[in-house]
Image (cartoon, rainbow, N blue to C red; front, side, top):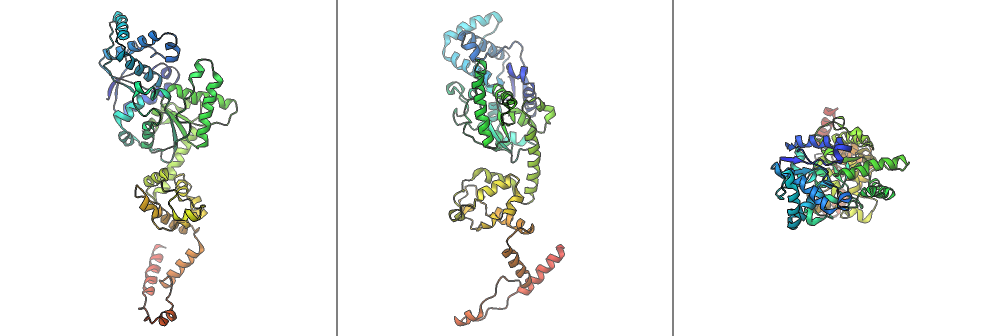
Length: 444
């Protein structure tokens, strides 16, 4: 679906126009043709309207949908609240024909009629299902390689499941698949499915709202995320504006927050200034600065490794307990070394020397479901360590002897003679020495 009505809702245009700007840019980049229709009102918001008058809630929702139907279009909204309202009204009126008829009698005064013959999608749903992660990946010109990003779905994008029926209501993955398609490392965390708590502000429970924000943001900091991505303006308000309130109270919390379309627009090559990221209350500059650093890290690693495989290996760790060395020496953790590499700490890895404990037995490669393994990575690391002068003295000495003699050891002729073995043929050590010496001189 690339030709549809867009329903911005109240919060985004009024409070977060930068989210609207980024979403418009993404629509353009993905080839969508959007229609903005006259006559729309608040969706309306459930807690504030439905709690007072359920009939008013369904009537206003049906009226908004009837305007879209009258234009012969489907609808995409970037707001979880609007999405939830529309999906709930759609589901309810599909079975309650009496309420539907009563509403249509009222709508007739405006020459409107609601049938329920339209497709309702959230922006994230449209990107994930209609466009697909593959298309998104193809549009990313500045991937977020090595960045640690967590996702907050928001309750109303997923639940109630009988009305929504999109992703798994308790174990979703589709937004995270999009983040991974943009090159980032998705970080799971304990409070992922916890409500943002922002609705407590609307009913006068300010302390409770801040407690919800504090709990999740603290969890994210413990998981060392570089940013949190949300898909709902109310959730954005909770984690950006209310985080800023916690910061003003001198609480040690700092998690940059992006709306999904903002991150996509950045990855598609749009500048922070064009999107208006300076309008966030919590600065995203730490994220942007690290993003630049990670690009430099990636370029350095790419000179020696397949960085896509390295990142895949670091995000998996399925072989964490398979290495035979780990079973006798728990200080050797090869998956942590791979993670250090992806984190840009190659100098640390080379200097610490743990990499020399890899036996190159290829157990990891044989057990790897992706057939990657870590042995080849460790072999390359050993080469880099030797070039940097941080390898074991025994390895340097052995190689020095090999350059001088062309062999790493000589047979014990006395032992061979005792066993009745004939002398071995003359080695080609001198020839190897000449070849290697010529190579070394040629390089110099």
